[in-house]
Length: 364
Image 1 (cartoon, helix red, strand yellow):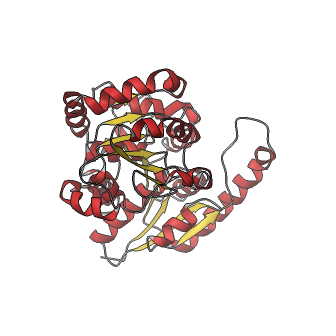
Image 2 (image 1 turned 90 degrees about the horizontal axis):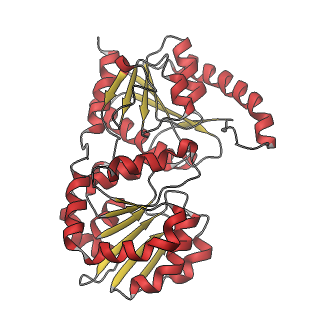
């Protein structure tokens, strides 16, 4: 069999990058001599994260349209043309067998050029409400791997495969890592631990909430690991006290932090939701209202509607957070119910199932 070549494109946030890396890793384990090339957006976090994972990456000069008039918007046609031309050069030189898009601005022009060149394409849609790029690409894509049911209203039904979202392999057995996690984060084994996740870039409103509530939380004999994001670390790092509160900009060992956690407060990005289903911790979702089509609220509602988590909107926090949080940390029956229900929604074989769909396009 000839050496296979894969192009993987996705980025902008960890929610697009980590699924892309997970898919590449699984393909690499099946085809160790295969060649991989990632394509991302210049100046976005994939340009660092992908090389750290051991893969080559090319950057396109591309960004999304803003919802208001900006200089970036006036440059959009030029950026799009530049990205289409560079994508054509990349595909002509690399000659991939399949192109895989996991979302983000760069995947648009790249998959568009791949379909024109008659190269099989696979879209991996993480959200319960797809973005405009994937809706447009879906008309020509060969397969669309999705994480939520009822996406036929956005995508051609015959192309959809319900696989779930790719998650890191190291999250599959976190229960066995509790002692290691407590040691790694220097935690008190006799106290409960709250994990606060604002997404890879941080979340201002969640940070403001924790700043306001931190002493109340700690007074309940709860220790806190607070991932505030790189944009906010200087503002909040003084809350780290080496004892009850740890403020971090980024967490490398997500397996250990999930193993340590007894409760989670999190944004509802698609990757975070999929990971939290897998690890099964009682969770309060605080969706970002600032994302396209309000898809984080829709992601969270898909879990909440099955009694798998608690949903608090940003505009409800001041009024309801303290009551909701107190009920969660004191009601063991509620904790158990949320844990069992969210775990029942997990799809631990998602990465393998997506790779199976990719292989079907190569090996006819």
